[in-house]
Image 1 (cartoon, rainbow, N blue to C red):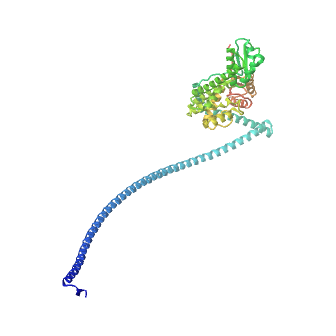
Image 2 (image 1 turned 90 degrees about the horizontal axis):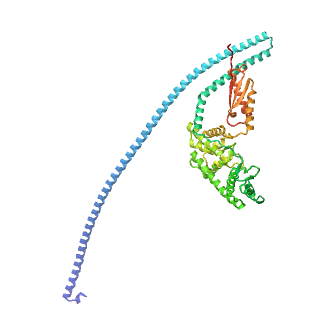
Image 3 (image 1 turned 180 degrees about the vertical axis):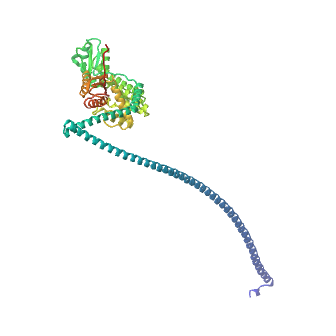
Length: 527
């Protein structure tokens, strides 16, 4: 009905439009299909390119991995070869060691076999010797019985008397044999040791010559005029009281012309008092204020002197670095004496002798000198601290961390304890040499005479001694025996008896030599 109302032209236009629409749709579909095909072709080409690039990259990575794997395998093979080579060398070395050990065991086995053979031979000889001794013993017993029987028959003695005579004969015979054996052994020991020991000691002492020092128990100060004593005392004794209280020293003003005596237990205080009094006497101004000033100044000077002396001793002995407090204590030893011997000089002398002894036998010379210098360090303060100077010295050396050899030498130089090392033995020997040499120490005349009398009395108490003489300041006793009562072998026994008696009954420094002399003289007169 709609179409019926339209004209032909309109109808044609509508049909043309429909056809054009259908043709447009068809053309659009065709264009779209072509575009899709073109994009599909481009995508396919791109995908093929990507696949080709991926294959190329994969091939490159594969080749690189293969090369790296080959290199790693080559490196592992090289390391394995080196390890195998090292292991082979270790195995070869172990094999060589095992072979050498086997050779050594073989040699040892052969040595043991030879030693066993020698032991068997020695055992056989011992058995033969034993059998021979048994035979000789049987013979001796038979002879003794025969002698006993003869004595009974001849002397008409009973069995006990005959046995007593025979035992005395055997005892005399054995005594001579023992004396002869002792003499032989002593000669052997002296041949190998005595000369060498003498040479070592002689060389050591020769290389160091010490000084002889005297003891000052009190200090005397000379005065220019006698009137100075009154000024020293002061009004109502105030000067002397001030002086004694400040110095700790007693001032003795007696009838001695132009001299006063300083008496005190502490040698350092005595030295301070001496210097102060000399300055006061020289200056002439003596009053409590001046005394205090001078004493304080002199105390500082003495302290400085002690340090200088300690440094000088350390320098002389060449012991190296040492604690400053020990240096001061060493210097204090200069004002300390023992049996009249200056302890500092004795310590230096001991250090030098110990060092020379150590050098002669190949020991540490510096350590020996250090131990020798410090062996009496306890004497620097033994009047201030309770205990022996040995214990004090050990405590001081331990406090300042001295070497064990030094502490050992201090502890054992008077044989309070056994020495643990050779340095301690050398220091003890050097200490004895320094103390015992003639002139080193002073003895009272009474003690000296009594020691000589005791030496001669002990010697004269031995049976067979004709006379004895103590010589060399009591360091040697010479004994003259009766040649008709004592034979040559018995002189050895007498010397040993005298030596033992001296060791048991006398106290003496150093050593005492015993010389027994037996002399036979035949005299005739030609007319």
